[in-house]
Amino acid sequence: MTDQVIEVTDLRRRYTGGFEAVRGISFTAGRGELFALLGTNGAGKTSTVEVLEGLAEPASGTVRVLGHDPYRERDAVRPRIGVMLQEGGFPSELTVDETLRMWAGCTSGARPAAEVLESVGLTGRGKVRVKQLSGGEKRRLDLATALLGDPEVLFLDEPTTGLDAEGRRETWKLVRALREQGTTVLLTTHYLEEAENLADRLAILHEGRIAATGTVAEVVASQPARISFQLPEGYFPGDLPPLAELGVTGHEVEGRTIRLRTDRLQQVATALLTWAEHTGVRLDRLDVRAASLEEAFLQIAQEATRTAEETGDIRQVGGSRRTNQQKETVR
Amino acid sequence: MSPTDTVAPPAARPARGAATTTPAGRLLALARAELTLLGRAKGTLFAALFVPLVVPFTMKSAAQEMDLKGTGLSVGSVLLPSAIAFSLLFAVYSTLVSVYAARRQELVLKRLRTGEVRDTEILAGAALPSVAIGLVQSLVLMGMCAVLLDVGTPGAVHYVALGLVLGLVMFPLLAAVTSIVSQSVESAQVMVMPLLIASLIGSGATVPLEVMPDKLARICELLPLSPVIALIRGGWTGELDAGEALRALAIAVAWIVVGVFAVRRWFRWEPRR
Image (cartoon, rainbow over all chains, first blue to last red; front, side):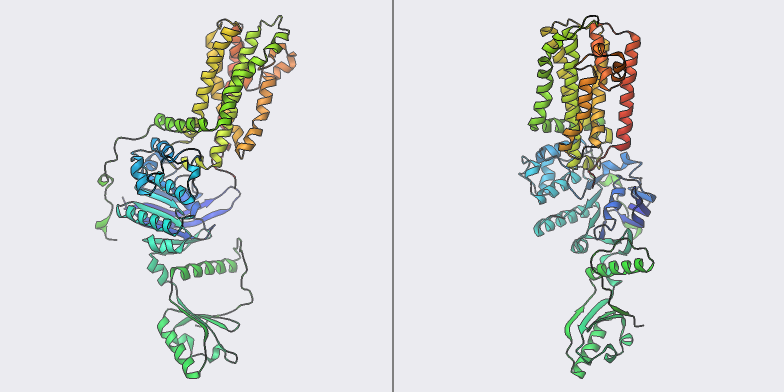
């Protein structure tokens, strides 16, 4: 036996109509680990989680939760997992207590309702109808039902969407506490901050594929730092100190704006500022930025799109794209 | 990760108790919630309780004007099956189409499917309160007819029971099938119409098949409600022979099989997007 609680190998999921939402992904999560699937809308997060929850069968590849196939061996898996879907799913005319009573009757080893309500901060709201709860309270009721059976594995599909800043922090606190007790958590989110705050490890999904995976530090480290500035009239990129020698791995020129990528931020920034000082050039809109998860995320999404474009494997590209941009690579 | 800090064995978790759920327990938990919801849906409740108990008796005068000579029927044995038909159609069938559509619309079905409860239990649990109402109502109606319309006691009580049981199984299934094409509670109220109207006109609920032209009656016999009515009416008058009963049973079972197949194949657990 391995110690992997969640094992996904070459998972593909295809919808009727042929659209392939998940295109061959693999990852694992160990006991007590919090693994985050990060991605934009339509990246394939929910499609992946639904297979792990046993709601859908993979088109190909294998999925194991607690060592079992969640779809074919649901009786072995369901009593040990807790699920929170992206959107509610409670009759609006039932009260909070009645909803939990119904779920408790369908959950092995259900904890007392009062205890679960307290843990999600809904104490005193038991007599309130679901339709009268605020959006945030509904999410917390959802979390309460997921926690009812004291699950070993918790699936949270965008648990804090619709919560205010405080509700989000409260949920994070609760999720961290659960993980400390040994609960394995699989979380999907499109909030970078959430992944950065909670995840032991994460995978960035893009168009059904894993674009990057590892700890937050590892994913960030795989990305370069950035410097951008505007050169005044009469100066050209060729006037700059030799970029490649300094450790610039790539640059883009768009009008007068220059963007540099580097793994040696301090060295490049120093050389650039020293050059500007000596030549008396004023660098407008100077922006020096270490790699962050956000940068990594945007970069990965952009690169993946570019690759897809080159291979002609392009699905749909929304919004405006820079087409009149000169791209050069210094190496 | 070092090999030593691997899994704590499942036993290390706090004892999870013997409180493992059973199918019956899950069914009851769902049915209880559904009954609470039914009690809060005043409009649905009114239609379910009031229509079957009152409407059949408003047809009494029409039944008295029918030419029943040579059919072996009386006003009572015309009205009694029709009262039960109203119960199956309104208290069970149309209530449940709305229930399934509403639960789907609110994503309740989808959410429930993430838990331990099985698909059939979700559908059966939701149906249980309506089926119970239909059963109690039918028994009350039989009692009322016996007292008020002097229909006497059934000649073949097992046929009556069989008809009722088949009806109580078939109509929840047909409700689930109808809900496949009902996107919302509002559309559910329209989607129930075809079967309601066809059943009321063609299944002997209001006009006994015995007074219809033969060819038309042959076709109408195949409607889902027809075998139920035939068994209840024939069972009550005692004039149903084994062959006719078997035929009715076959038609009813065929509809149940079709219903099970359609639900398994096409039932939608979440709204179309």
